[in-house]
Image (cartoon, rainbow, N blue to C red; front, side, top):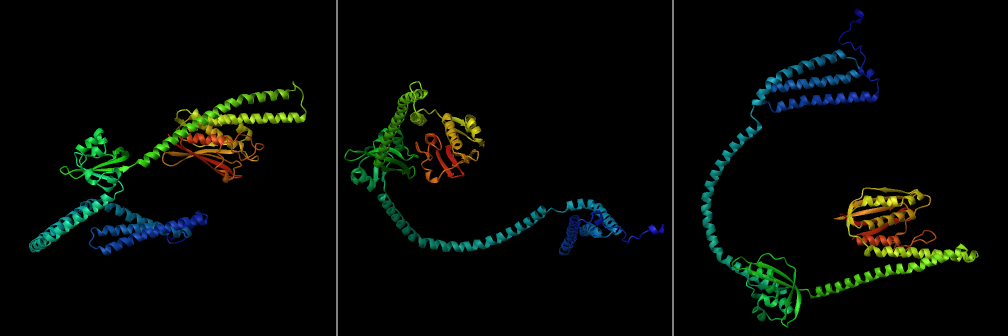
Length: 537
């Protein structure tokens, strides 16, 4: 059928763009991709041609040419792919692909016999080794020639140097003598001006030298002290085995040992003793440093007395709080019982005013009872504390959450607990710590917003962990941040919020017993974050 016959060059086919529905994004995707591939494939033959121009001595140049034709033919197929998006020259595209296939097959056939030949070529490392061997031989020859020249020059130089050495020997000796004299002068100046006493002692114990500070400290003259042994000045050298052995065989000694020094007038003063040996085995001496620590000892004794008095005062205070809370509880119970009987009507009727006064009396007694309970708990933090053990804070906070379940339901509050560490502490007191803090958050919440409490931890300084209890409550003014942990301190009246003002004071005492720190960051109307820094287990 003549009407159906077409020429290879007739462009009667539709372009690929129709297959892509002429969608711009699809057209651009294929057109740009094929164009970039064509440009890359075209650049490779250009690079190979440039290499062959610069290195016409390269072996198997025909393979580079064949590979360039193959790459260029591949690029042409991608160029025609771009062309055929808008045109239908598929016969031309097929011819280019046929040409590419011929070149590809030819390249594949010829490259396999070429592999053994290329493998047989010397390796770069072998060529480098040959070049290195040649360079080494050249260098050896140059070295030999240089040594011959240097031998002659060395003979001449030796004569000159020997002459110079002989002429400078006298000058060098004079400088050495002067240097030793100046060194000795500086040493004596440092020795005498040292703020600590220094004794130079022979290995047997005889005192060879003493500085001015030692003489002033002990009350001896220099001649008097030189005639004595170290045992006369520091008697402990005769009684302490480690000190006596140091005099016989001086070795490294840990300085800073406290001892006593005997003064000329018979008085004994506390000193800090340091020992070190100088010189070699044949000419060894011992340096004894003596530091007067009388003032330090007096301060330590004073601090010891103060600590003892403070401990006794704390014990008495705790005992007083314990006894007072117990002794006052009985009259309070009677007061509450009698007021209840009065309100029952069995002993006469009161008018409205009378019942109001009895109610005031009962409220005051109940507040006093709550204060006594809080005071008793406060005193028990130290006096009734349990030995420290490994405590999983996750378990502690979960138990607190269960204890406060009713309060959480009443306020529609929520507690979010992130993973917490394990620490060494008193499990009961840590439970009370978190219960007080979370109860505090549930107490001071905004009426129109259910409380949201978050408990989490962060790594603190070395060996410490920071624990946080964060809420969305009413907050407080930061000017009161230093007062909220004080005993009986309240920022709100009893008509607004109940409580005794002891909860946070107990928290601080618990944290201090655990050698930690507690503080708070807050903003009114936003919330409060308590931070507790404790040692990890």
